[in-house]
Length: 135
View: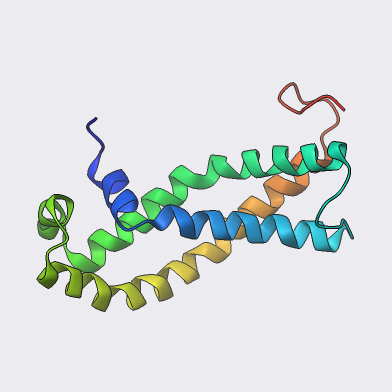
């Protein structure tokens, strides 16, 4: 399977976990704000599952943002080497760049998180959505 370099970088660095933590944190915040317990009725849990699925639509944007920051901080010329192997020298470069990447990513994630929250609110307020589970 041939992945584009940005997607491959995201896979190698396991950034998907970071996105999942953001989305799951958003769901937990909505759940808390609505006063919904951790384990609610099946119908309510279906709504949260639908909401989580709708947040996954933001992953490609996150992937491009994170991958772009990796390239910016490591240098495009190092991408093939990184994709081939995480050799100790390059791994050290990644670890050294990780803090700067994380700090810069936080700046961008405020906007992305806000867009995700607005989408979550819109999703929860929609009455007739053909993709929403029937309750």
